[in-house]
Length: 269
Image (tube, rainbow, N blue to C red; front, side, top):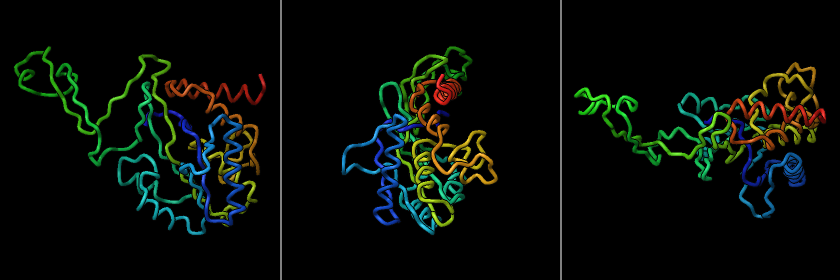
């Protein structure tokens, strides 16, 4: 919601299902290994509650329909039925959905949502009537200095920092759902594992476009010349940069920070 690159703040707890246990165990371990390389924390609790669910199925849309029915919040932020329909449609043989949250300076964490369900905390704010856009009796009498009160029933309050470089807000993951149809991918399981590891740790919005550098994320883009069948130095450099960058930086500053760290990490300068 705040336009920043989200990352895991809490320890990850991946869980995979839909294939033999020995195969799903390798998938889970690969996600954990990549997470440790990038700086993300991994839960050491053997009975941790899964926050990364990886499901293998030959009927992905049917599974997603059930998730939409029972766990709609896992599909991620949406503010309209049209957006929910878009999120509820499988368009890739390996696809991820991200439930995100916003954390403020005080450590208060709120799941990103449209709040059209009327369950927001609500805020009562006071200020000059002309700023609040209210038209109560005082303003109607022509008093430009009148103070009005406005009720915002589904709003929440956050503590921020007054800076052009950082505002104190952090975008975090709450839950990641990954559905994969291995038969439709046409790649070795090791390749699928690496692709899943990347999308489990970072929300990448350009998976349908070819990256300029060799990347595992080109796997499903189609027509790419820089396709890799394994995690590349560029992929690892990006993930490390995401987890090293200042998460409280304003969006433009944060993205520049990630790009700089990625470049320096890959070139060694």
